[in-house]
Length: 126
Image 1 (cartoon, rainbow, N blue to C red):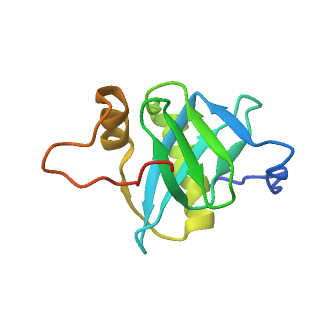
Image 2: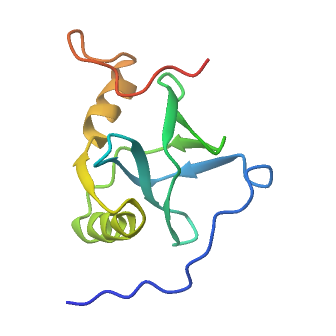
């Protein structure tokens, strides 16, 4: 199967779109260790974020290096076809995706804390 993604464009300026509500998302670790969100927006467009810098666990909001905030409205996407599309799209930008950490981040959001003996994947928003 060959996949062609068309109509590629950059995200709007952060000032024009400071926060995005996400209903379909996964958080991926790149080969160099940075974390990025791979998502399908409400418009149907696929997006890969700049690197994630911090998380507000109680509000389920992730901040990126660009300054944009992403509100994780639902648990990580489970639909296999949509997950595959998001990961394939992310692999174009991130080159090497080494791990999916979505479930660990969602567990921290739902409990309000990182696991007792585990390390936090993202620092808290200051």
